[in-house]
Length: 248
Ligand code: MG
Ligand code: MG
Image (cartoon, rainbow, N blue to C red; front, top):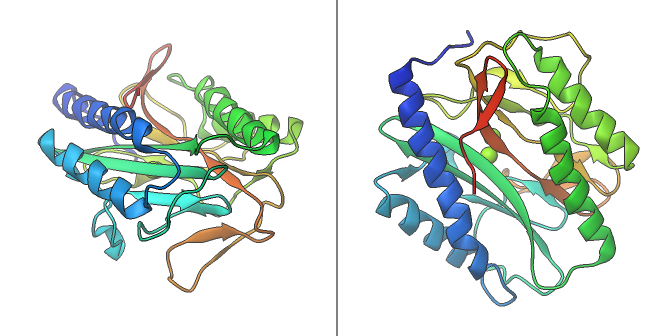
């Protein structure tokens, strides 16, 4: 069931989303060569807790970190650890925060120092694809409209669309209905209504769209080990558009 949120729920979702956005803003200056992914994870957790919230992903389905940190060919669900970020890496940080039982969810891919022009190209067009998808959202639009816009943008720039992982509804659970795929057909899929809250999250690859899971049973990487990017916002569906709840 896709739920329409009450005004009281929307207030809490707005606060949770704002904490996620602030956590991204707080972390950004630390994303430099020499820092480990575990250090970034601890900084994120401390910040989230300082705001009266808890990290949504800690323990979710058994995930060991507070946030997901995925480097270069890692698509999503990277486990924070001893890996030291290097000049030229790209790092995707997926942050969830739970405030009074309601969640916000947003991922962003950051450059570490100076990156190659092909990585810059990947980041720029993946971020654009998120906003192309979001631009379709309003009361009465279909979920398929979002995926169509994302995948058309990816096609235009010859980027691979990851299909096995999708966006989702957000509320008192981080992952609610509906699924929000990054591909689809205009006018197909569930109808969006004002008061729904969804996360749109394109994952685009410089090479093949195909992925596989590492032996840690969490980290998803690209099949050809070319870089991948991930941009995500949680948004409230409005009558005539949408409001981003996880603004940075
Ligand atoms: Mg996320
Ligand atoms: Mg998500």
